[in-house]
Amino acid sequence: MPTFTRKSTLTCPADEVFEWHTRPGAFQRLSPPWRKVDVVRSSGSIAPGSEVELKLHALGPISLSWLLRHGELVKNELFTDEQVRGPFASWRHRHTFIPHSDSLSTMLDEVDYSLPIFARPLSPLFTRELDRLFHFRHRALAADLQLHARWRGQPRKRVLIAGSSGFIGSALVAFLSSAGHSVTRLVRREPRSPDERRWNPEAADLSPEVFKDVDIVIHLGGENIAAGRWNDARKSRLLDSRFHSTTLLALTLASLEQKPEALIVASGVGFYGDTGVTAPDETIPAGEGFLARLASSWEEAAQPAEDAGIRLVKLRIGTVLNSRGGALQKMLPAFRAGVGGTLGRGKQRMGWIALQDLLGLIEHSIYSSSLSGPLNAVAPEIITNKEFTKALGRRLRRPTIMPLPGFLLRAIFGELADAALLANSAASARKALASGYSFLFPEIDEALAFEVP
Figure 1 (spheres, rainbow, N blue to C red):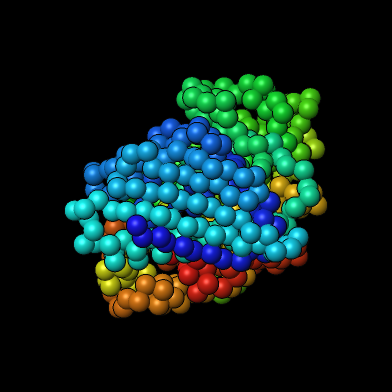
Figure 2 (figure 1 turned 90 degrees about the vertical axis):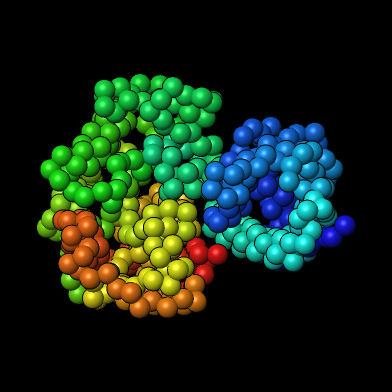
């Protein structure tokens, strides 16, 4: 029976690494972006006898069921899981946590497995896939622990998140949950679990009871800006989806007798319009164009919360880089096929941020009580679209010689092309840096190396 091993040294005590694995969200944080995995059911524990059933999406509509049961467990030292039924002839995974000091430990994964007889000729391919999987898992674990360690010793927060189903929101739920925060999701349907509470922004329906035992409120909701061509009706929906929901949230929070510590709302660097050759900081007023009106309207809608004494952080988010969603996910198929290229002439300057740093900056905003007002959520390095294109080509080892001309982008996307794809969107990260946030991935090459595994 083959045995696969992977170990790495972590700048974190062993008991802290063990505890991270016991929390909700840990499995999601360790799931690779190239392999879609759904949790069908879970005991929510690694205690002996607890089970988790997974659905592995193998190819297109083909999926495989995998039932795992946890076995041996020694607190702060090890735990195991073993296949009950699934795609392997056998599978046993042992997670071991080896202490070295108060700030250093080793994480060791050992997998004893055997493939079904018909799959054994593919064993070398599977070994490479295991190596890729656990390389990703160890890097993701180290990055999360590095960010969370900044707040070691601080009390965990009770966080309510609106807009938790998108790729940023779902990653944030898992990131904060695995850090030990208590996370509740604000949903627009009937709650299906104790960690969900309901609201209906369209009907202006939001009970003050929703905010009981909540320290921090985060609002990420809003219809996808780049989901289709803009027309008057669609622009109206984009404005309404942000303005009405944020107004309802802010006014309800302002009316509470027991108010949360902070409200963190998402906005965008589109607030500044086309920034040209500048990189505006948060003191610069709103620019021109629809995205500037959209962002400023969104931010103004949150103002009643701040007027009522609640600390308000308005995250002006740049292009978020992650292979699970957003613009990068849409680009990857073309770039992997070797037919990627610049957008237009590629001279437009980008404000961007790795998803990992956006999650870290949100947790930083939760704990930094002196941080308020607008905050540019962008990396310190400002690059052009051409430089980004070359960096992504280097990461994928593919040519990038197929530009999309501006006239073609305008024909496909209309007004959206000039506002979001061909415009300069650079912004300054000085306020984030001055507030004490240290970026894990301040430069594009290292960001893509992490976010495109």
